[in-house]
Length: 85
Image 1 (cartoon, rainbow, N blue to C red):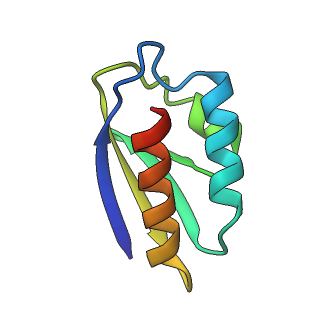
Image 2: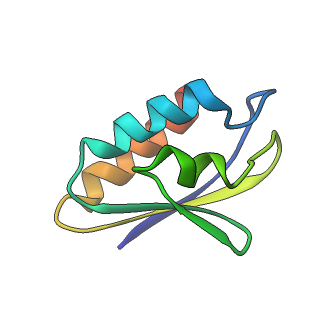
C-alpha cells in the first residue's frame, strides 16, 4: 500500500474539470485508488466519489493506492495533484 497527502492549492478546489481528469488518470492503473478528506472516503476511479468529498482550497486529502502497480499509480497521481491542483 502506498499513500500520500496533499494540500489543495487550486482556488476552486477539486471541481468538475480537474475531477474528471483525475478519474481518467486513476483509471490508467489496475491498483485500487481511494481519496479521503477527514473521515470521508471516495473511489478515485469514480467522479461522484471524488466530487462528493467537496474538497476546497487549503484542505488536506490523502490518496491511497493498493495493488500490483501501486508504486507507479501513487507517483503518477501525486504528480497530477502537484501539476493541476
